[in-house]
Image (cartoon, rainbow, N blue to C red; front, side, top):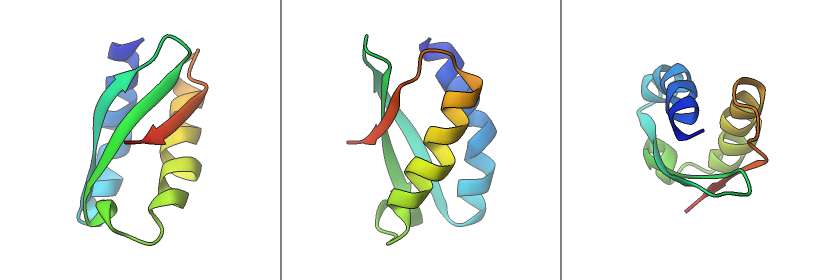
Length: 73
C-alpha cells in the first residue's frame, strides 16, 4: 500500500508546491492510517488542517483502497 500512497501523493504534490508547501510520507500503519508531515508554507498555515482532511485525505481515500485516515505527525 505504501507505493500506492506515494504515487497518490505525487499527484497531490504540485498543488501544494504551487502555494510554497509540500507533503512528506512518514508511514502507513497496518490499520490504514497514513502519517504525513506538511512542510514549507503548509507546515504553519492556518488552513493546514483543511488541506490535510479535505485535500490529501480525500484524494488518498479515492485513489488507494484501504486508507482509513490521514494524520499529521
